[in-house]
Image 1 (cartoon, rainbow, N blue to C red):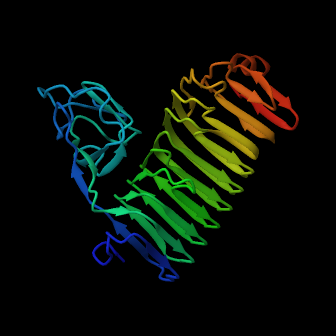
Image 2: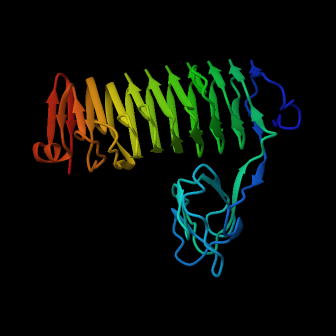
Image 3: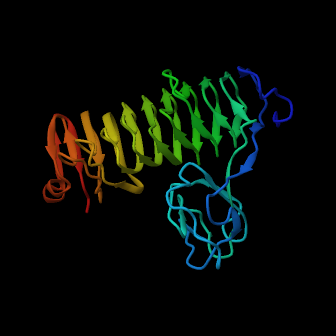
Length: 328
């Protein structure tokens, strides 16, 4: 069931409540062409393209470096199609994204931004058994309560709302994937059963999960002035964070039962943050192969500072109920 043509996108408030259909209910926005200062907006990827790097077409002008973070790379044909990823970075010849399986020099690409006609200023979804899918939109604020399944994908989350941009409470399955967060945007999940935060790009933004049974995260965080990923009293966590240039500890884990690395693990450099990872109030944390750094030290466990070298030497650190270890 698609509502895309049936809703007033210009309305200030939208509500989806009480739908009991077994199918999906989908709201789909539209794309607009981005306008690179130099180089091609679309074409066929060049030689040297990999699953995470799209090289400019052969013979094309160079792109302008560091211009595209927050735009989206869309693979519309060839290897890896169809696929959409937020752009993490670009230099004059290459666009970097989370991995797209099969992307290669046959991939046909477009560099896109969201059509501003598809802007959800304030949407509430509650008490739905149907899966609610919102895709290709700009979202300022979304509240989801007691829903069976919610999927947010290929969206731009952009607001400075102090109550949070995406707020999920008591939902069964929550998936936020291939989205870009900016301007103090955030996502909070409380008392949800299964939360997936996959292929997300954060720019001055943060994510919070509290009392969730399972959390899976794969995020890229830059220039965040608050903790990029905060997990509190979650049962099982699979976490990958690449964090660079953040001014607060990129990761804060509090009272989580079990956590292990996922995807890239814990990497990046944060000279403006005292620590890379803070852990407190008990739990079991496998930090194998972590290298993420802070300015004062790397790990801050129950008010004690440690380096990755310490962890590698000791193999495990036990402080006040916190077990931090490496199996390397």
